[in-house]
Image (cartoon, rainbow, N blue to C red; front, side, top):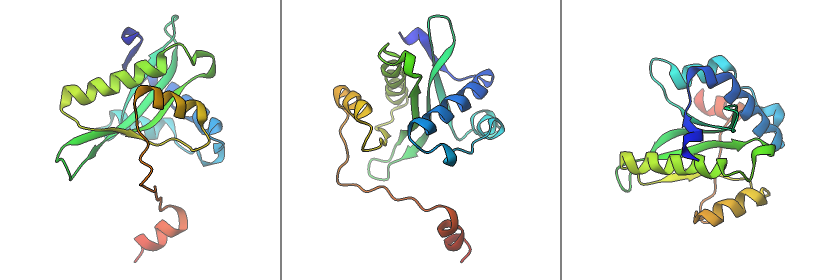
Amino acid sequence: MSERVRRAQQSDVERIVELCRELAVYERAPDEFTMTVDQLSTALFGADPTVFAHVAENDAGVVVGTAVWFLTFSTWDGVHGIYLEDLYVTPEQRGTGLGFALLVELARECVRNGYTRLQWAVLDWNTPSIEFYDRLGAKPLDEWITYRLSGDALAELGGR
């Protein structure tokens, strides 16, 4: 399966944007999706990449899944980790092991580089994904509440 997962290349950017848009639709927030091909291309392949991605291909070599991630840093253990921003496999390819293969590759990335964490968030209503993550041995961090500052509130705070 790992031969069907690889690091994203410049030629994958348009497809990754399409897959991320599909994820936004799945997550019931299509109007919130504004990322462009140029934005992702710069983030992944610009002079100072800040985002990384892997893709999964079906048997015909078509990209049908992606994992978009970035590095975090733990002040508690003093090393980096990976934050998985998006994990998505097209509906017709779910259950084929590609989502698992993407997560395996990110875990390998952590192990190879001495990173101590692979972390992500999942919507509380997304039962299929929660069950999948539970089967992997991932544990929910129930004691943490995620906050987001955006839009007018971000502009107001940043303008002080």
